[in-house]
Every structure is written in structure tokens, then in C-alpha cells.
Amino acid sequence: MFNAFKKKHDRTPPGAEERVPPGQYVTEKFPVLHYGSVPSYTDLESTWDVRVWGELEGEARFSFAEFRALPTIKVTMDIHCVTRWSKLDTTWEGVQFKEFLKHVPPLKPTAKFVVAHCEQGFTANVPLEILLDDEAMLAYKYEGEELTPEHGFPLRLLVPKKYFWKSAKWLRGLEFLAHDKLGFWERYGYNNNADPWREERYSD
Image 1 (cartoon, rainbow, N blue to C red):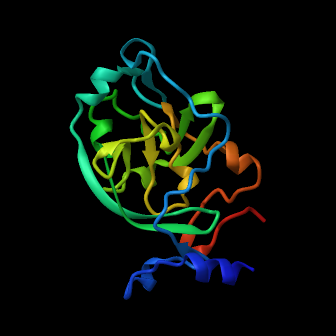
Image 2 (image 1 turned 180 degrees about the vertical axis):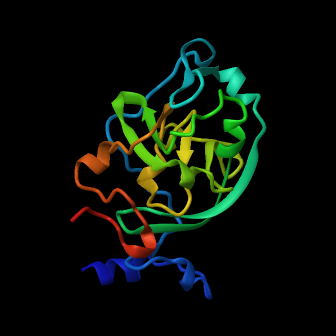
Image 3 (image 1 turned 180 degrees about the horizontal axis):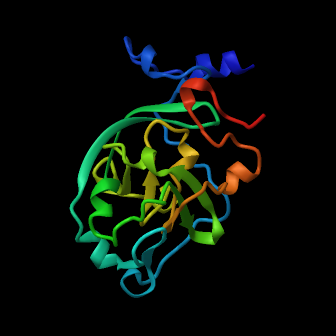
């Protein structure tokens, strides 16, 4: 059944096969998958912020306007969902994670992991070293437009080279930790490493 579904939906451009991890098919659509309902906001300027805390020399909070004033980058990357779809050449804009760190209190030497805290209590955990990748960002635009609510407006984490559930939507906070702490899907049996090229979908 999966082979038939893959054949029907595969849109792999010629010569791009090496960009598609094992067990994935390429789609031109952008499927919507998430836990819980889609948040809505009536006044971002007064009700929305993003917080940073944990293994730092202090805490930080950014209002919507303060965050949008930070320097931005544009990155084009392939994304891969654990449900087996891949989408090639997606373009995102936002604040590079390494740049964001310049605007928060210095990290303590003990900071090794990050937990993304999102609306409705959703969390996703990522090693800090992964977020220091040049393409990792806090994204708020996709293909030149604001993120739609279904895809994470007003802010989502963007984690390159991992299954897409690590790129948590509706981001509200980043907690820096000295030790790893499983996120929502990891606690329910998803693989903590989430490497698409090793098909690390689920834990043993």
C-alpha cells in the first residue's frame, strides 16, 4: 500500500533522489500536522511574547515588536516529516538561532540542551549543538509570506536535518538545560535523535 501511495504522490525532481531520505516520498503540498487546536491571537503587541530562561546568566523576554526588530536571514532547505513526506527547496525567514543568542544573557558552560515551549503545553527538545547549525532559526515567514496559523504563526522553531516535529510550532519560550529532557512526542515513543537519514522515527 505504501509503495502505491508513494508512486501516486512522488514528485521527486530528476537528479534530486539523493536529497530524499529512506522511506520518504516527495510532495508539492505542505501537509498540516500538529497536536491540539490552532491558536488564535487578537493583539500580538500586548498578549504575545517569547521568553528565554534556564542555564544562562539571567532571563530574557521579547515582545512581538522587539523580536521582529532582530536581524533576519533567509534559508532554503528540504524538510522531512516522520509521517514520510518530504518537501524540497522550502524557503524560510526569521532570526538565526546563533544570532538570537547574541541578544540574550550569556549561556553558562553547562547549557547543552534546549527545550522549546509552545502554546498548549507542547514541548520539543533539541541538543544545543544542533541549533548552532547555520540554518537553524526562529522562523516567522515561509515563501516570503507570514506563516499561516496552521503552520505556526507567529513563530516556530526551524531545526535543519531532523524530522520536522522538532521544528515546533507556536513557540513561546526556550529553556536551556544542562541535561536532556524529552519533549511531547519523545515521551510518546518518538525517537529522541530524529535523524531522517537513519530513519530514526520511533524509539526501540
